[in-house]
Image (cartoon, rainbow, N blue to C red; front, side, top):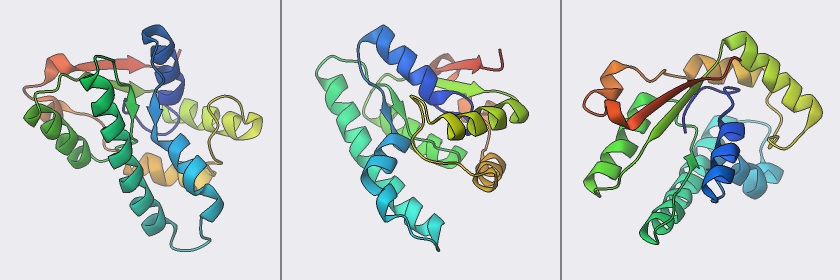
Length: 164
């Protein structure tokens, strides 16, 4: 599951999980539950990066275990850089693991509206507050999934526009 902040990844993952009778493994939930209370006021990105790496490693270990035991694994790691996603695909291919990448997107205005609403309501998909500044930074850092990333893997991708 990939897409920019506010695209609807967690909502989509929860729906897919209900359909396939397996709970999704959503990175932001793990980060919030394990580390949010210890979040520093300064040097946030270095702190976040290290914890994201640790959580992602554990999530993928759990996902591999699910697949090994004949279950689906629904994973949302928030990989905003194409290089990180390519590394994941390569690892899956090396292990002969079948995978499908659901790429979600919506307009920037719609995504920001959703994030603000999620912040205010703190509903089912709320894990942590995403300020306008963090939304802007994360949106600007997002590298859309493009032809180069999909080359030779086109059948592994499902694109979902969540504007409507």
